[in-house]
Length: 512
Image 1 (cartoon, rainbow, N blue to C red):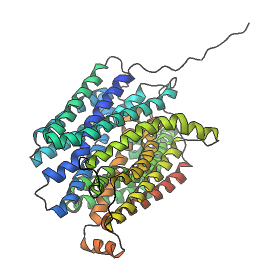
Image 2 (image 1 turned 45 degrees about the vertical axis):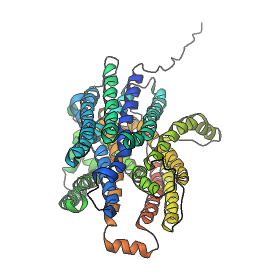
Image 3 (image 1 turned 90 degrees about the horizontal axis):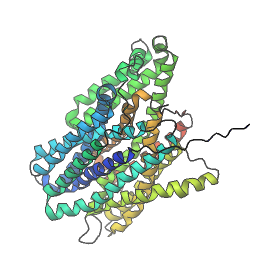
Image 4 (image 1 turned 180 degrees about the vertical axis):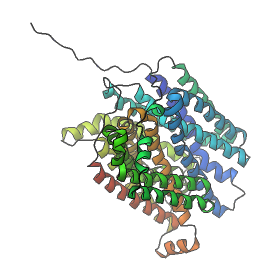
């Protein structure tokens, strides 16, 4: 007698719509304020600064804010994994987020109050950023993980759905009704997002925090490895010394960039030093723990190689807007409205890639892995900046350039974004050990902080008259030179990413 066994069809978790709805409203609130921030600074808050310096100051404030947004995921991930869990941390920091929006609407004419609002938004938005995406992953296990990438794509699609409408509406509201309304409406949407998330509280899979109870956690193994004298300890000490030098020069760099640079130096040199001495932690923590830490360090190298992509991507909300101001366009069209093209293209490209491009490549025998997508995504961002660099040369030579030309680099950059960012969300979750989901997703977000840090360091490096004179001697404006520099920076990173990815061993760290 024969028996027929039926394979259970993976089921979509019922709680996913609450998380997706929360993310759509939250992203509308974030991009609604972010996409008008540079314009508002230029036309209102920074009017006391001489016009030749105002663009640089607005760009610096914007990228400092973005650095904060992607720095605080470390705090959110640590609080979640060690103390409160993802649900509680998301809910409480969402309320901080709402308070930040309120400050922007109330203190539209007061620099200190407005900057305090930006700090609260950076804390709230950044703190929940790694947790919401990893909270999505927690709703899946090995039985239905095949649906996870589809949900992460839907997650990324709804992010851009909110961003699209925010990019179109907020510049118009800012011009028509003023800053209090334009910054107040995103605050209302953030409150709605918080209520949607709270409404699903009885349906979520809650994974309790375990990091503090694990004797073989990542940080404990690294600490043991570095506690032994050796070359790795010297390398880690060098990182600390360089970090102190960066912190001591905070006046030249700015306090936020200096703090982030110090952190990157400690982490980079400390990680390298720990890698050199990991075998010395085997006796205390065991082979499995050492192997897991080595896998995490390999993952962090990949994250580091993605940072040049974020250097380019976030400049669409600063450098590209400032370039759009120099282009010809209809009188009613605001330069910042061009950013609506990015989320619109994302919403078209995600289904195009999944339904047409990837299946077509698979039939042609091309295996489209997550790492290949990400490497090509970094390369496409390089192509986008080479194009805007050419536009800048035309503008600098006195040609009238229509803003329609920016459609091409937006398309290239957005295609790169879909390959890097949408893929990276699920990739970071799947590669993280179970007890480190929040922290590892935080490191993924920290790559955005480092990317914006490169932008600020680049801006600081060309401020001196000697640097400007040298660049002009090459026949470029400073703006055009920086565009081509970042294009080359990203292309080199894409090549290094591709070479390193060949040696990377994929993990499958979903719940059983």
